[in-house]
Image (tube, rainbow, N blue to C red; front, side):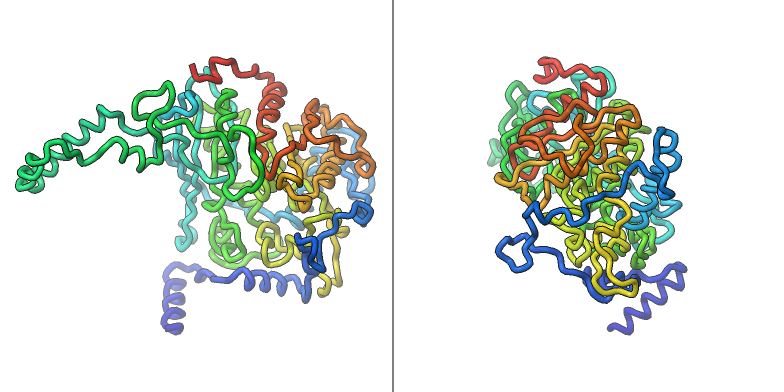
Length: 536
């Protein structure tokens, strides 16, 4: 059987001129990258279990083994950056190069084109707010390697009770219609009449059965509502309309923690914003075994990555950027100059990377992003560089990132202190655009593992770039080794760089109302009126 499969693969390669797709497990792909880099052994990552022998450090006295961060405004030749022109033309390109080579990987040149198609358009009511919801698919051109299909899935929802184009927050998560419309009672009656006619035409003998049971209906309104997962009618809506969704977390399935606020999507619509949800899985799988598939596998023609190739975080950010290209070109109801990106946890990492590397995004809400996001790599507190170089999450990063967890390699050993960049520089790449770093509290599920203090330090250290570009930062000193997090629920929202730690769990919907108010004010957009909020 194996011989037949090999012959088939060889024949396919001969016909297409393409190599057969490599099928690795995550462990095999990880081993392949270690061999490419000449790494013999990696340091194990810390355990999140505080009773384990290799538990993560949570002692602040031991948290800063590399206390001095690379200076965000010093060129590699040692000269200081003192003008915006030096930042844009010299320092920023240096930082981008280091991140792409060593941390997140490079997007390949000559990326395939995407053909966007609207799959479905639905008029819906969400909490008495009329909306247009669209399911949209981006078919990536796979003519260069037909063995792999990539179809980017997203849902766009915009309110129709707001004049003019609206700002939109793009959210990493599971696309889905918020409140699919169902037929009214009168429409169900018409459907039943048509169905009965079709039954009789297909089999005239069925007329006798239908005549014996004149009250029986092929379709009932409760059955339609059940099929769509709908309630018995929205307050103030038409009969048969879906019930308003309950308040609560709907944005990122699987995220734990306490949620006392309406869902982020409800808050956005009430404020006169639209939102767009985009599926990361439709861009690139969230596992190492998927690296020879998805968009990374497609451009590599089914072959394993090289050390500088992009990881899943950068691929998700790229996909979000291409979705924004579509919104700009094809959706006049969207104000393409006021589109933001949002995510929590691993999606928070991707949101920060998207704002840093996709220049069309105007703002970001970065939720509980931890290591690989806003947390400093150089911090020894909770999640560590070694957590992202092992077999579990290495696929998020460039292969080269693995070097900084190496204990035995042809180049010796490297530590987080050897990484030429750190997360404060990633945040600085977002300047001068609106950047909101959000966290919750460990007591409610936003674990210490994420290192809220280390992320605050990075945000403080990114401030000089915002100020250089004529924007306000957090409004504190930029001494990241001395500044401590403000008390929980303290809004630091005066600048274009913002921070707020809310008192809930591993989510950012508790900060959504703060984000919306802050972003509206910074964009010079009036707050939503009660009429807009109620959908009247």
